Length: 359
Image 1 (spheres, rainbow, N blue to C red):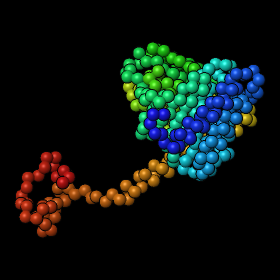
Image 2: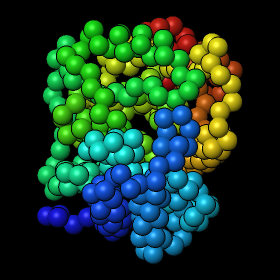
Image 3: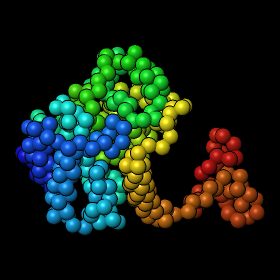
């Protein structure tokens, strides 16, 4: 690296490369992998688990007091109530991986009091390393990256994700895709959200949107976007995309146009009429774990915001609005000459706007 990196970012890079080495070795003989379905079309392999453990071991060796939020193990490791939480997806794009389609990545983000500060996304099949520190810019393999300069949707290439979960409302998804497709130059779905977000940051895409994503899918990529000069939020343009399970990102102008198009589809993840109820126990357990994690992250963010605003609020002096009418009343009662400066003439002309104009 040509520039000095934050120590915590260096640890994230070390962890990502360790996981990438495990993934690359396993990719040489995919047929031998043991694949388990967590839920409908949602898979996990021993590679996911081994890569995740390698990441966690590397992080906790350096920072044993930090918290962990990982896709496969949740918050079972690390400190439970630390201000620092590492958000980990050891293999984003598992379905691609088990089919030999080389679009997958390791995603690691570090949040401090709910705000992402460090981020790494590593594509082991291409040896592409995306990384960012808050306020320091985003990089790909030691080269600074920026979002594209495109401003018109007709010229924009947009990334997305397709529905795959049981109960997803496919008809509403199709309508949403249609609304975006008729406006843009093309729509792409490689199947790894962390990489999609990095491609927006690098200017390959001009925008991206998807629903049903968890914090570990988007935490690292979202920092890449903002550090590369782009915008990221939920479908209504608000910044709490980590908790809404929906995300839109892009260049500032493309982002605004996508939000305008996608706002009617916010909270689109609702079970379609007639969809089967329930699901596998594993899927329900994962949803419960994700919900608990989201609640914890949201609480941390709200606590940080409250702490940031509390000193300013307590330090601000209480101000009382004084009107011209009130000053005139004081003069009439002999309480003063209506002037805030001694010796100034009292017969000053009133301001425009009547007696209620503030001084």
